[in-house]
Image (cartoon, rainbow, N blue to C red; front, top):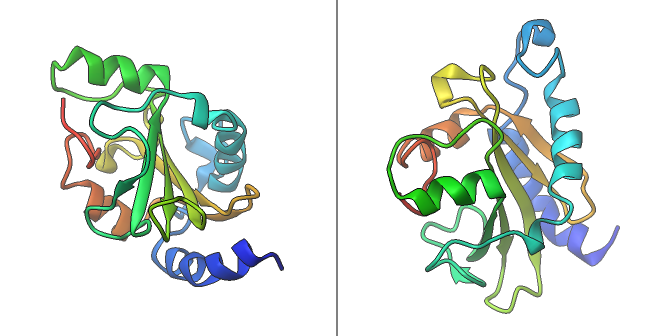
Length: 168
């Protein structure tokens, strides 16, 4: 087990306890019947180059976390769909396909990554939670948790369209 994996294990266990599959039958899911595990695997591929994505003004680089959930420090990137919505500053909701990625760190230098988390808007996925799908990964892309959880939903419900770090 790598040093990062050993460091991330407590965080992974906490996330795993708090998050999990949304449960039930995935056959009617809007993602073509994909399970949460399949959606998480696809999302990891989609975010492979997230470090080249745009960062929101005021949230460039590594920032102190507002609540420590993802680590003492975080860095956030948004895909073009999310960036366009934030740039429009018109309020409302993120579009289908919007993705936000957050890396959590134990220190301000970013030397120790706790986890890579992502949220993706998928039309019809979870109407009671803004249609957001959440996944957390270790630094090698192994899924630590995926889907819906009361802790993810309840925390993000405090934000505009389940986005907590900024408003538009």
